[in-house]
Length: 349
Ligand SMILES: [Zn+2]
Image (cartoon, rainbow, N blue to C red; front, top):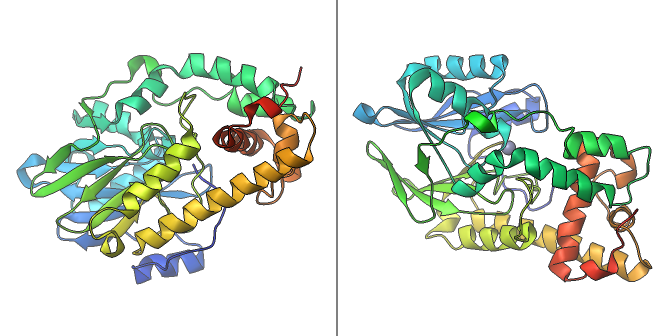
């Protein structure tokens, strides 16, 4: 889940993905190199409207999938069609690697694990957020009540953000992971070696996966070509997800040969120019922090909603409700925290 369109936008490497984007169509299944494919998996709700799943042929080790997409039947069928197109089946999957806990990436993982016995791998911080889901939503609701959202909009915010939020898939009680993805470790899939790069920000446990030999970074939602990924969207955290996101962007921009890497993101299209794209995303964050600082300067004892109202969000906060509004106010709070100015914000009764 991500939103907002920024400047500093790299072009697509793949003509097919560029053409699909222009035509508003789903891109085709593509082979990036022998034994590596991208499979678009559409889903019914949300923006953007498809996830790019990556399939890696590990020979005798079986097939690995990075981010298999949503668990709804239409998405699963699309994934199966994509696997058929590359001459594989769901039953061939032996490993599912997850960049982060969002359902457009993780949703199908448990279904595949249950069906095929495939191992599931993700970062323990995101596993913790799934396990703590119910308790975190109680605290989210409590916090959102203090934001000062107009009363007519508050029920929608609580429904999207707090305990009214739809039950998660997978079910936290029955969620099992077979392999922790820890920063610095490597995962071998046949001849392909992926290095785990922990990139907190979008979620605490977000990871990118680096195929150094082939010069490919699977970037999940950490770096996308056109969308500014939201931060702190993985659950309640003691960290400042905004600071995390900036550090994580600086980190991937410093990877060996970062400028030559093919960035294979979770949405949109593949591109090169990671350092420039990371710099554009950092600049966007800095600009927003400056807007929040000016709003705090201009207001006397504001609520967080008052502050957010002065931030030029895409479309303006007046056009928002539900999850978008909740996310915009929460993001504003991270900028206030990054400025160290929490004391200036009043909790509404
Ligand atoms: Zn996503």
